[in-house]
Image (tube, rainbow, N blue to C red):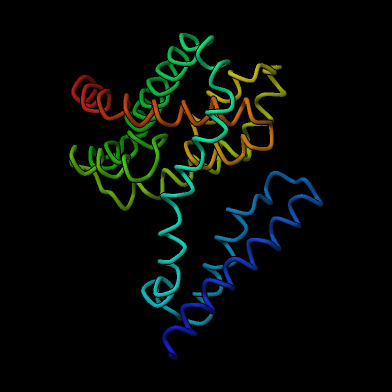
Length: 229
């Protein structure tokens, strides 16, 4: 009974914190206050201050983690609603996603090589713009560190969520498909969650780009690593 109350308390606490941070974000509209970032910082700070371990937190947090799969699957609904429009623009979406994933890989490798990073770190950086489970598998298969990859994927996602709208405004990118491809191909699931603020057409394109990035990234990552490393 005590264990059930402990796990329930963690779940309710995280959900309440997320709702509070979402309310703050919607009120102030500051990009730096996206709930994923603020909640992560606050939870990390709480764990450090109480000296609680990650394992203790995940005794309740695992129930939230189980909901990740259904949440990703639910992204198919807005994609279904915009299916006709997507089919009309499938060439642009496909080409844009491939260009996006290749550009993300090559630019990351180029900067890492220029900085003189070791091969394992470079390989861990390679799939940073692909959704976490796939990125970790790619990294491990190529000799990278899956834990580092997971952190880099989170950083890439948050960067896209925070800077994406600014980049769209700076370069006057107003097309729904262009914005959706940018979020999905560069910032995976976190970007797709941000795309929901731009409307159903953007989030549906972002979902497609997210899926294509995982598929093509799995094929292209070994090839890019072989060519440049």
